[in-house]
Length: 208
Image (cartoon, rainbow, N blue to C red; front, side):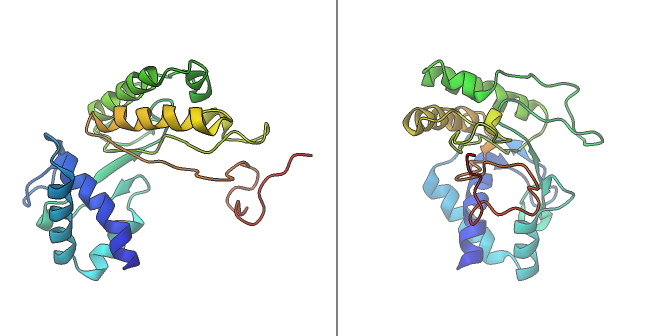
């Protein structure tokens, strides 16, 4: 059940947003299908996957990719950071030569304009499409709680209602380009100090 709950949402989004043939499984944008159709297709694909394929699908490959399975028509998906524009990495193909550095989300939130958040995110989604990026690893949606937080630049301020309204329009802007957004850093990700070993659940950052 845990494996099914992890795989199905991504399979459904992939089925809704991307086309591919079993021969090539090359990702290509198509007209999105309904939730019901995407869910149906995702269930069919999951039923055909072997256990090793399921494990490979949720563990990633080549650092910034989700493994594809040509025999099932499941394309390999390229992932990129982040909330205020695309993080381009060396030696990745296909690759954009440059990307736009948008104002940070806390500045976007200060406009109190959800429509602007939608257009902002749609522009980022269009750059994703141009660069062959299927999954955007953003937006960041943790609340700005501690001024020393290492990821505050990626968040939408300290007001949860305002942040929620801006983020929901951001998500729709990305989705409407056929790109998959990733809501991340839900709670207490307030420290980048020793981030590989710290635990935000048991040891959240505290104000002095």
